[in-house]
Amino acid sequence: MNDFRYRNGRLYCEDVPLEKIGSAVGTPFYVYSHATLKRHFRVFDGAFSGLPHLTCFAVKSNSNIAILRLFIEEGGGVDIVSGGELYRALKAGVDPEKVVYSGVGKKAEEIEFALEAGILMFNVESGQELDAIAACAKRTGKRAGVALRINPDVDAETHPHISTGLKENKFGIDIEKSLEAYRRARTLENIDVIGVSCHIGSQVTKTSPFVDALKRLKKLLGRLEEEGFVIRYLDLGGGLGITYKDETPPEPAEYAAALMAFARDLPYTLIFEPGRVLVGNAGALVTKVLYRKNTDEKDFVIVDAGMNDLIRPSLYDSYHRILPVAERERVEIVADVVGPICESGDYLAKNRKLPGVDQGELIAVMSAGAYGFSMSSNYNSRPRVAEVLVRDDRFYVIRERETYEDLVRGERIPEFHM
Ligand SMILES: *Cc1c(COP(=O)(O)O)cnc(C)c1O
Image 1: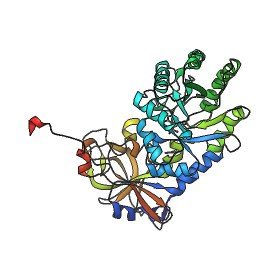
Image 2 (image 1 turned 90 degrees about the vertical axis):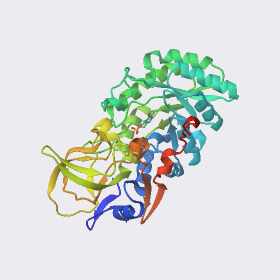
Image 3 (image 1 turned 30 degrees about the vertical axis):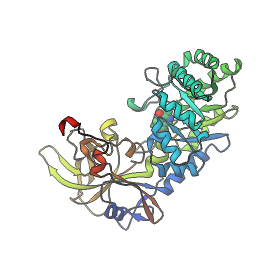
């Protein structure tokens, strides 16, 4: 459920018509609903209320500090994958003891930054990384809490680019070799082995892959206990899918029930790293129709947002619903909705049936709250767009539109050209 709906023929986010935001901040812009974000967090986190747990929002899905703050105020932690994300989360006021750090390529500077900040744990993805963390911890005189990220070799049955729990993927430590890795971790100075973690992929629309992964981890946990390890955290990652078109992912309550059936008696604090399910349907990208153009083959709707603003359709061939911001009687067309970027892969929708929108109108690209702005770039030297948070009948610019000056910040022409 989200808070975008038509009222008297105008598309609203909560109590604010999107047209009004467009007039104030220009287009394109991302818009998020505060009420939807808060509700999504409470529904997800509340689904596990019977168990000790921590919901760590996956910052990479939407990194704006205003959004991070909202989840932090709700009691959430964060899952980070870089020093930059840690910086953002600290800015937003996160309790460092609610930070878990994932990712296959953590650099020494980033590890040190995380140790200085005092994060809860590193989800370690390789033996060499473990050594690097131990070395950094020793150098800085800190102790590092670690979980090994296990690759459980389960098929998340999602898009190959966002599937992470198969042997062939670069993520995690092979479950078969994990016991050995744990034994070695225990011998390292400055390392506290406190967790087991996994993350099998994204936009997963069934409970069974999560349950399969949990079952495999439970076996490992049994062995670890036998060997005297004191594991405190079981991190089951993120990945719960959402409805973009006609997918029917489990509700958080259903997902929680399926997992709790196997995790209820475990003596660990469960950690979850949801991203998409919290923010995906809480946001939209609003863009203006610049031109309509027909060729013999095709109808094109050319808009002012491109693949640099929302890359998911180009990258994953993903579907986003498109709604005109003004609802009225129209003829239906079949068109490609494309951006201004000089690439044929620059589209927001292909062969899409949609209401015949006119030049100058605004359209909303729905379900764009996750992996939308956070994956945006300046390609074609396009300033990144504004982000707006709506709360009740007010809206707040939570990231200003970039300027041309922002585009060249930090660039220099060398002296020999002066
Ligand atoms: C991307 C990612 C997540 C979040 O995935 P969603 O599908 O957005 O829930 C969680 N944990 C890790 C390690 C990730 O890489």
